[in-house]
Amino acid sequence: MPCGCTGQCGTPHARSKCDHRPSHLRRHCAAPPDPSAPFDAAGALLSWCSTCYGQARKRGLEARQREADEYLLAIQEELF
Image (cartoon, rainbow, N blue to C red):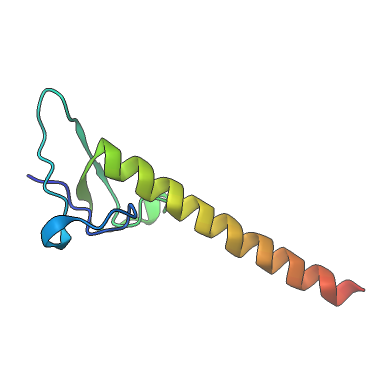
C-alpha cells in the first residue's frame, strides 16, 4: 500500500499523492489523516511513509502551537 499523504507534509507530490511504497529501506506506519491529532481521536488510519509522516506531524504540531499562542495572546489582551 503506498503512502496516504496528499500533501500534508508540505511536498507537492506528483499525481497529488505520495508514491512511496513500503520496502526494506522505507518503513510505513498507520496514523490518522491529521498526524498531529491524538490517536484516540482518530477515526480512519492512513499508511504513511516515514518522511511524509514526520514532516506532516511537524507541520501540524506547529500549526496547533500557533493557534494556542494566538488564543493565549487574545485572552491576555482582555486582561489589560
